[in-house]
Length: 189
Image (cartoon, rainbow, N blue to C red; front, top):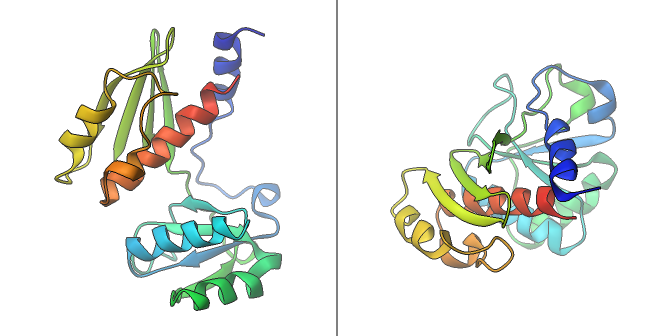
């Protein structure tokens, strides 16, 4: 299968869902935090310990602090809480997605623009030219490091560009890292 056919297939599987599908949330839990920095740290430490986590947008009905949450396998709740406690991170709430009427929203939105592919993660957008995977645009956010991030990424092939998390330390840099990882996942052949 050609790269473009694989890309179209992966894009068609992109969901930005809001209504609950019981199969997609079975066995998953959600960690809610007061600050975005806690989400970033929690995700990082849990991944280090091999826990399958995803950063999502919590449904408005349960949003308490920041607009991000960490989704994880609920069966690992005790291990997750223990790992976070070792690093002085305490979630505001730990919920089972089986008990929530609306599921978390994906932070990603993929847009096929013909010759180009754009991925938005939260408020940041990263666009590549499909034929050579060259990064052609970085936009969004309002953090002071966005122009620097754009300068460091635009004009470089996706597989040779530095990871945004190594360059920026703001919420915009984190969101751009998520978009970067999603593009790499989509473009993997």
